[in-house]
Length: 379
Image (cartoon, rainbow, N blue to C red; front, side, top):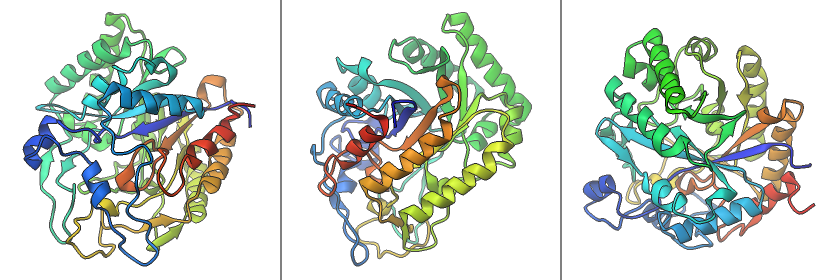
């Protein structure tokens, strides 16, 4: 396939030490989610854990470390990093991967970046103990005043950057949890007014019109997640510009401890085919590399699929199967206008959810090479 679709991979920025919130919670400035990757262990026969990163347990807030990621992404056909971006009522979280790492990298012009505001509740699941309700640490709903602060911050710090991703000239900004967005303002009309004010702030600041995206999902994953009622109408009522997905398991239940990758792929494609016509805006399909959230289970807790992160997994995922899935999903958008040929990927580095492009001890550079073949890199 020729280089016809824009590939945008989610980037989860919890792989650096020194985050102030993590330091307070863990009592160590050295903690990062790499600790969970290191401590992962097999939970059932044939379970491929732990996974070992081929590049080591690097500090993503180091521009040199991020530069390696950027070069590998660009060399294999990735166009965009969509950073999972966190901001709560008391300030930002995990921002150093972007602010120090990516923005400090001398080669950041090779891969665009965008923000998905990960406005979900952050709960104490790193790691989680079986049978213990995790504590709510940072509520996803914010005050209107906090949202104004967020708007000014993203317009001033990010949207102006020459590497910020634009669709048809408009900066892309995505909302992970529409339910929490509604809770921030009290209702649909109030939320639409806040989004219109956000758009006006961007115009006044000279960055132009915004492209506001919603992550649409029908199956909650994280603790405390809830699915808003009838998303197609809500997306329209809020005046949003597009939808996409974060991960297949937001749409597909995993019935087996080891659910086959191709089975999950086919169920996702069915879900997309059934739901895309219901929306009045473009829907950008998703390709997921796998699913295994067991590294977030406490090592001392016995495993059983009783709820996230004690979840069923996707198995049989290989670079070849990912390549086939990516080819099929890119084909879904090939006849769209050029700037709407967009596919999101889960993910660049969700190591503790078992869905990542970064090279490991099992597949090496296989997933990146599969992506390059789909994009026709080097042809």
